[in-house]
Amino acid sequence: MPFAHKETVEVCKKQEGFVSSYYTATVLAAIGRTKYLVRYETRFSEDRTRLLTEPVEESDIRPLPPPHLEVAEKVDAYVNDGWFVGKIVRKVDPNYYVKLDSTGNVVHCPFYKVRIHLEWEDGKWVYPGNKPQNDDDQAKASELGS
Image (spheres, one colour):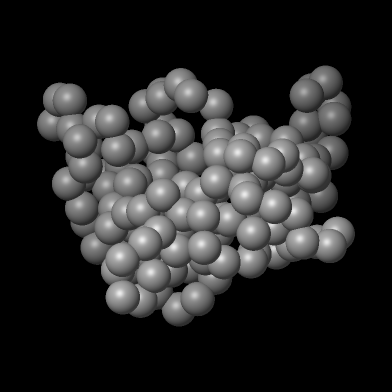
């Protein structure tokens, strides 16, 4: 999926300690056919004097998810300047306690730092709860007209 100059996106970091985390960034330029130069909104250069700018693979970039928030079991929680996948384990209005998949830690999150978890697959947002898990489930979904 091509991304436009100045488009706000999320970048998946696949390094140890960052797996399943996404960071908001702005696309600065395309680099060839499969890379983009991005500038992060919350990550900084080593000397912390400027926002981090780096080339990233297109497969590590996704557009921002839809802007609505629904209470759901699987969520993304904004922790340490990035979005981490986890599950709500407790709700104390209007906030949540989220158990992070990457570390197993339970973190307290204000409601505005929790969003429904969606997967970016084949150029579209997919709610994992609606996806068949195996061939048997897919066959059942087809029978039901899903």
